[in-house]
Image 1 (cartoon, rainbow, N blue to C red):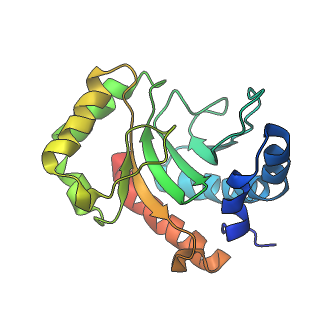
Image 2: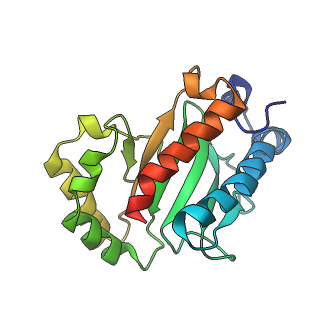
Amino acid sequence: MTKYRFTQKDFDIFKIDGLAPRMEALKANPRVKLYNLGDHFSGFLTDLTGEEQFAHVAMHARRKVNPPDDTWVAFSANKRGYKMMPHFQIGLWGDHAFCMYGVIYESPDKKNMAEKWLRESDMFRELPQHYSISLDHMKPEKPQLSEISDEELEAGLVRLRDVKKGEFLVGKVYRPGDAELESDEVFVDDLEKVMTDLVKFY
């Protein structure tokens, strides 16, 4: 079994019907990789940010009926959780994997982060423009920066600042068959590069 990279078998898990069968498949394969990624990148991000980072692997423990549509490992400077803080995430949906940094609606830092990013919005254009943003971590849509106007980018950050449910994450998307998923070494090297690009938003 591959240690870090996601394979077609991992993506196909989200086609499995029923909570129990899908959870069993998630535990057997992607979750093992998420723990491995958590072990590797908690140390990498600690060095990168200068703050100790803790890995939080999604357990989906509150689900009683509907199977999860995605799964992830998140990294934050808080040992107890990540949702209340700006954080890095590596995750998986049925049609893509991703590595992103940002804030979700639970974070009390939302307004401050939005104002900072609005002042420094040129930073988004300094990223590779095939990187993507997400305005809702519960939905798979992640348009590329190249597809988004400066006005749309600003509107997303204003929504993060002003709307209670507002969220904003930025990073890279990986599709099944992408060269970055061909080996563990290539995948980890690319994730490290992406996180190094994103740390300026930290």
